[in-house]
Picture (spheres, rainbow, N blue to C red):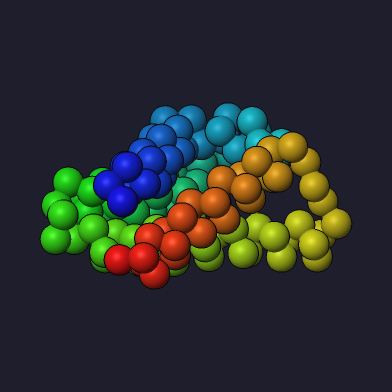
Length: 121
């Protein structure tokens, strides 16, 4: 359980830091081109700030055993929500790149693992 929470938390922290430091470049690496200071500020706030916050909560729940179950719920809700929305977006937009498939597998894999652990414990 704690390993899953660490992995899930570090995933959010890693992407959050990348978006804080180089938001336009990070998005471009996924094949999405944006430009301008306004786009960078929005990416830093939403992708950077939100991901850092969620990641911090997941890691905090990993180091505090009494909070592990809450962390699993956060992992399920956050990665499950992102993965479900990504799958719908891929279906509606008719797009599928290696990046999108990898991200989808990671998100739904982490959400599924959290759901399995919640059921088991």
